Every structure is written in C-alpha cells, then in structure tokens.
Image 1 (tube, one colour):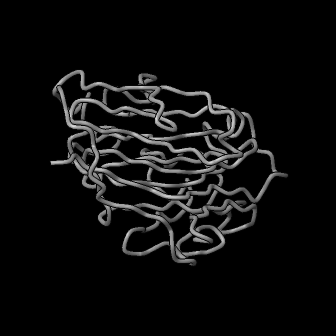
Image 2: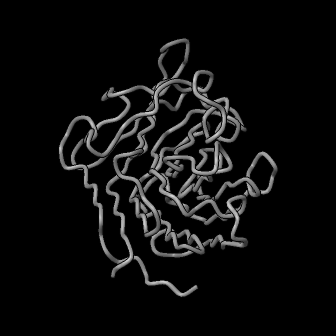
Image 3: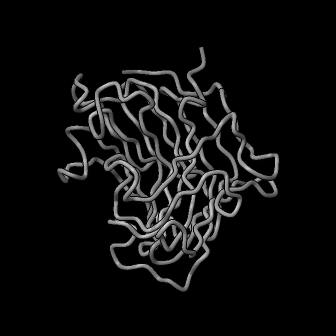
Amino acid sequence: MKTIPPTKLVWEENFDVDGLPNPAHWDYDVGNACELPCGCGWGNNELQYYTRENTKNARIENGQLIIEAIKEKYENNQYTSARLVTRQKKDIRYGKIEVRAKLPSGRGTWPAIWLLPTENKYGGWPNSGEIDLMEHVGYNPDSIFGTVHTKAFNHMLGTQDGGKIFVPTAEKEFHVYAIEWYPDRIIWSVDNKPYHTFYKKKDRFAEWPFDQKFHLILNLAVGGNWGGAKGVDETIWPQQFIVDYIKVYDFAK
C-alpha cells in the first residue's frame, strides 16, 4: 500500500516548564511488579516502585524530562522510578513519532519508549498489541531494539517480531528514536536510519491489531526478566533516562 509520508506536526513536547511534567499531557502508572497487572510489560519481575508526581523520579529541568531511578527503600521495594503515560490525553493512531533521548548506563537499567492500546479493542495483552519504539538494556550497552507484540507474535510464544541497531553512543549522546506507523506497516529508525519493518501479514487482529488508538509510555525499569538477566549492579545508582523532545506527525492532507 502506497501511503503519504507523515509530515504534519500534530503534537510537540519540548518540556519548557521546570517541575512536574504537564498534567494535560502526562499521567502515571503507579506501583511495583507485584501490584500491577501481569502482561503489557508490567509483572516482569522488575525491582522498582513507580511513583506518582514525585520530582525525584520524574521532573523537567532546563528543557528536558528526567526520569530517574534511585536506590532507596520504598513500599517494600529497593528502588524507585517513574512510568509516564499519555493515555487518554495524547493518543495516537498512525503517523510518525520521534523521541530525542539519552539513555542510562549500567547493568540492570532498562529504559523504554513504547506504546500500548488505550481501549484494548481486541482484549487484554497481547491481543490488542504493543509497539516497542525503543528498548535498551544496560548489560548490552551498544544495542537498540524495536519490537511488536500481538496475539500471534509475542515473547511469551517466542514469536515476537523485532530488529536491532548498533548505537555505540546511546548512553553518552542524544539520538532520535522513531517509528513511522502506517495502516500496513511500522518502520523503526534511529537518527533517520531505518533498521526494521513490520508488515501487516494478514487482515486479522492476531497479526495486526494496530488499527486503533495507542498511547505513549516512557519508563526506566530496574532489573526484571530482561533488564536484570545478567544481574543488577547496585553501585551505579541513581541513573537517568533523559528526553529532550517528542514530536508526533500525522499524514498531511
């Protein structure tokens, strides 16, 4: 299917005002891996407690969003962090999403930029899909991953569809992580260099649930099934996941 490139800017977040993230754009998922529902990236045996409206864990400073994971006891957890969501505030269906960010470093860090469906049109995870725009694990510091999960393609079955790209300065420099989401494919890129495409293989939700509104998620996890696969270095904290800007484009008419 030939489509028009997404070139119409519909939302831009430059984090201009210091303090807490703008509540008109951002909400929080709160709790730990035991309290939150399994699936959709929660319940991955992560070690952090996600706090709400706590500037220690999520704040804007000098035009940048800082998500900070801290080694501290909180609600029977040893770490705190934040998970910000645009659910029912800035939902997205098709277009291009760009996020300029610098990633944390060290064994046990697991930052992510990803999307989940806002209404779960086809049921709970993984039926309604998940788009991982960017994932990074500290024990593999020079690799960036982009993945989708659906009923037919997901990590529980070992059938997830994804790609990766070598970015040796991901923890030291800012890079632009992006997807272009069309009605028939999703394309991942870093600094405008495409590295993976997922195509609509069948016109069924099991293979392609990506015809509904999704919301953006930014979080920094500690440990977990993937992030902690080689342990957690307890000497590296605190660590920061820093976002410079977000731009969302729709298809120009």
